[in-house]
Image (tube, rainbow, N blue to C red; front, side, top):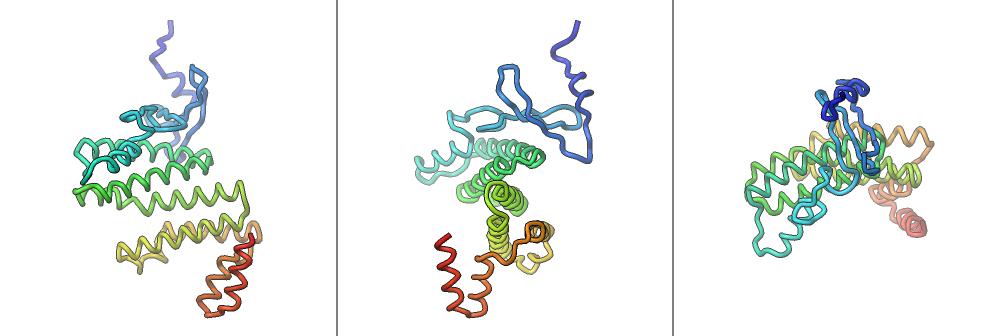
Length: 241
């Protein structure tokens, strides 16, 4: 007699590889699709929509949505210790699902989950009175932004044009530079690994799809060189797109 609670057969069929992330979408017993990730001593299962664990905190789509609602209703709203605990749980859940989406190249969902995490970080920074706790999350903001920029650009490549994907990367690099300036570490920007990887992705797309300087890049150069007549022409072209 087989033991339905034992997952030995599943683990043997799907071997763990320490060097490569393994994720897949499978059908559940009730017919719904779920996302799975193979981890060293088991399998993690996540829902495709809403919170990865399938719960609805306080009847909201996520704990972020609950906190956003509370912050609008409660004067002088501040995160409680219980809120911080739940926020930490949600950060981890969305991280796991984000890397799964990236692993199976579902860039649109990866972008959405990265955006959720950034919005949750913004809320924590605004409503927490514990700067050390905020900093424990803020240290990962460049990494989450990197995932968001990368995924958004590759999703844009799938549904639009290589030039529009390049523009997503350019805007993302500008946002990262602003963050580095905020952190007062702008001197580290050009050599930062995440910046280098995004720049390499941009140039790879440019070479692979034979994309020259985009209209926005030409506009930036014209403004920087005080070629205002050319800049005006480029703005008109962009407006007509």
